[in-house]
Image 1 (tube, one colour):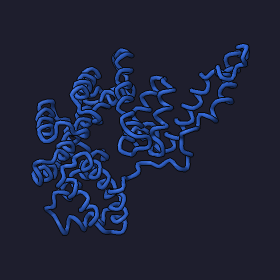
Image 2 (image 1 turned 90 degrees about the vertical axis):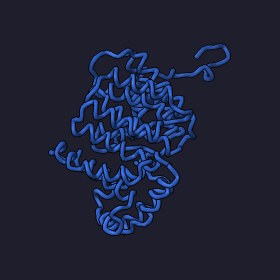
Image 3 (image 1 turned 180 degrees about the vertical axis):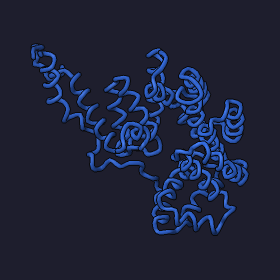
Image 4 (image 1 turned 135 degrees about the vertical axis):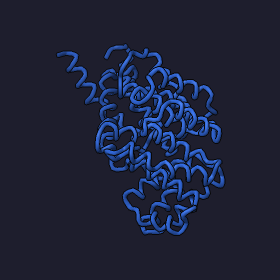
Length: 333
């Protein structure tokens, strides 16, 4: 009873002040597009595909493969619910490499959502080939192909061929690495150890500031959401520490690393590293992302906000009622 009383007292005393540095709930947004993609989505909502075509063409011409992957994914998601503008784009430019890329992504996403997943994904194979041949430099079709391979139960030999094609085009493409990691996870065609080994090797070889350094944390997420076997806690903590170091290389409230910070926060919460989780929530700022919270609830934003409150409560409950600065000169409370 005394422990429960002290915990409650700490929560009441400290939880309000721990909101410092956290934006109010009504200022937190989900999956905010950046300043380049946002106008393209607004125009697509009006039925104009021109800005979307332009922004993807810019990423292709400048070899901005990470942005290209993100933009193609978001545009395909928009086309899934609002297809008219995209149908016009394909009708006017059926061989446009950018339109073909979105078409391939859209087909694979639709296939994954269908009860007849494997059959529909196999039928979308020619679309992947067309996207890859439209610009042989582009690694993004190969990321889509890795997702496709996972859904069609492709054997390891096929996976390895696709992986070689992907890294030959971009050795440090985060999307391709994340997709390969899923294939190698225990939930699919690998194991937790195989998944961690792949993630740790890739992170060790990554360039400074590369999001690939968060791959071990993604492996930890896969383990924590589908626990089997017995990985040592030290390996999970090391993955989180590496991702924390990467997070600190970016400014607070930067939308670019928002997804990896959201993922890292989930891992830290599962590891009960409450202080570290609260710090990541401050760094996230207003940028919540669907992943990983959509794996926990149908309302990812609501799940994020609920977890944010829970982390504050946990930190408050572990904070002494009075800090050393609040003691009197004699050292007494």
